Image 1 (cartoon, rainbow, N blue to C red):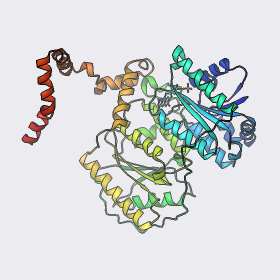
Image 2: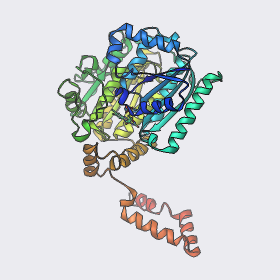
Image 3: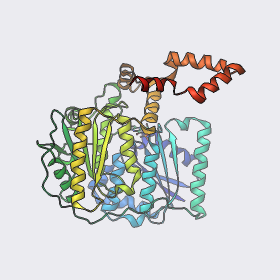
Length: 459
Ligand SMILES: Cc1cc2nc3c(=O)[nH]c(=O)nc-3n(C[C@H](O)[C@H](O)[C@H](O)COP(=O)(O)O)c2cc1C
């Protein structure tokens, strides 16, 4: 059988992920794994229709399609996202329909589930037969047990194709409404004071609803609000994963385009940031994904701590929890506060006006009070993954992160909390003595909130 591999790593043949595919090729020599370096060649694929058509011909002739990608900023890299958009723009969906498919990634398991759900959603939209996801840690191939697991996955994928086994779709298609939002004049009543408000949008001329929502949001304020359209910013490339930034947060492109000065001078200085975009397939646009990927130069360290984040989205966001979780995960990791989401889904212009006005009011209120909601599992779990990896295996490359974690107290390992450590050690010994164990258990029944009670009494 012929398996076409869509390589989503900008690194092409030197990609870590693609070595797992090369391993599968060795394990299953009777089948051909034809690797297409989609992400590395995306500019040529975009420019030359013949190159794109050649890829589609390969796909049409394949028995199976394997999506292979690294995790980039909680999703697939912007370049692979762009290829997915081209499938729709060039009307090439038919080549994918009915094909068996699977996804393989490498990462450090930071939001890998979001990327895999995204790809599965795309495959369901393209009416493919999705066999399964394989999300490996970036070093798994070195481990014998993990290689065995990979082989089992390859076996499962190939035999599902051979036997035409049934696959079950996970996602319903998303439906875009043709509602036209017509805003009324804004109130120009909200005083931002000394709080900086920055709107980032990728609205194109055809994105009427998005453009109107941005305009109406800005018209809530007494003073003019700064709007940056990503289309007007010179960004010569999305992130290519060179990791040069790891040492000192200096991006390889920083001298060559406007992204880094924009991020440092505008984004980092904003108190209230508005992300405005139109849903394109199951995410925002590839340009928005480029924005996220390029922010990687700031490393694994929160750079938006305390920033208020507002989201203005045109499209069926309430049907796309995965995208919402992307934003929530991003905010949690950044230690930023989500003010809210406004979409055009309510299909009622007056209601959207009111929601945008309220979003603006609340953003300023939270910025002034400094409120940041507590982190959920998304923020807490994400922090622990980064903390451990920066302290450990990633430290050599990500020196800037290491310094940041050290200076900010980000290395909050439990074993360095000496009082808790001592209490736990003594408690563990005590639990082996029946009388002490009884007392501890009694305390657990009635006394866990002892200190909480004291705080409330004193308040
Ligand atoms: C720009 C960039 C963003 C990344 N974002 C994530 C992420 O969100 N989650 C994660 O688990 N790993 C992330 N990683 C780590 C890569 O997914 C991992 O190193 C992967 O093995 C690289 O694969 P490749 O060599 O095939 O490109 C990121 C790496 C880079 C360069």
